[in-house]
Length: 372
Image 1 (cartoon, rainbow, N blue to C red):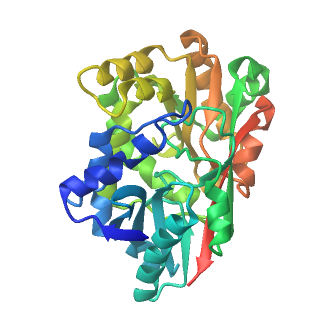
Image 2: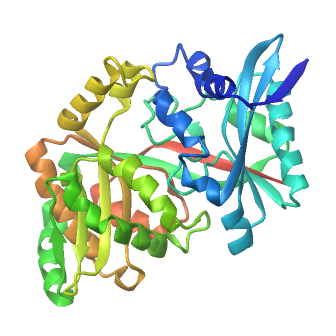
């Protein structure tokens, strides 16, 4: 018999966070989160997303043993402002027992119905900066820190329980040697002159901070047309600055401004921390922090985390300016492989940006939905 219990204590929340550590203990490809950071994500006093959203956390038990987990998320900003009546769910992990996954999904479905929502979709997080999608291809490669990894049996559970594919994502990579600077070096000179643009270079994190709010504003503008978009509020900006910017080498943050110092393009690249996080085993101390700092300084692989161009400048070649800056930085750093985060299959603009680098899709993932 499967029993689902809501998490109501700090001890229970820690059990929720640590469940995948046992589920994936024999996996070479799963990347553990930092437990402390994961707990802070779910802390209503520390994560400002809870001013516009609510979340409940559930554990499934079988013979008094934890066999699954799920987070039920209601984003009121999405529901009330965008009129998208969606019950979100994420952090959904389970053993290969369809009774377990069914019990957990029925729990979030009932919550959705109690709020008179129209459908459930997952796995997703609170916002566009959270992890998204269940993996359907690419199980034999290490997951980056910014995506979920899952066992191959997951997708079949969704289908069994009446869920259908809602969105499809792909993740790709390309060797840095694929980058031919001739495809953008001359163009970027012309574009900078034509539109009176300049690129900003950073060597210290504190140099980035005066532009960080502008970056999140531009993120909201440049991604607003995507089907999965939920805007980042002013209060969330401070949280994300602390959570993400300090993780990124300042030289991996590229901004493009116009003659009035208005931000019209940005990109954030992160060192690949996957192997370092595997060594850290979920803990920063005593040695985890050392592994992460070493990767931040020496990793020869990078992940393109975010790239955004102001709608007025899209399709005008501004990305050439950004790529030229990265080419110079990556050449000095000796970068070998570039990875990209999950991108919607219907995001034609982003696919056009990368086509010159001959990327290879190495993972695919999907979200699933069910009408309530």
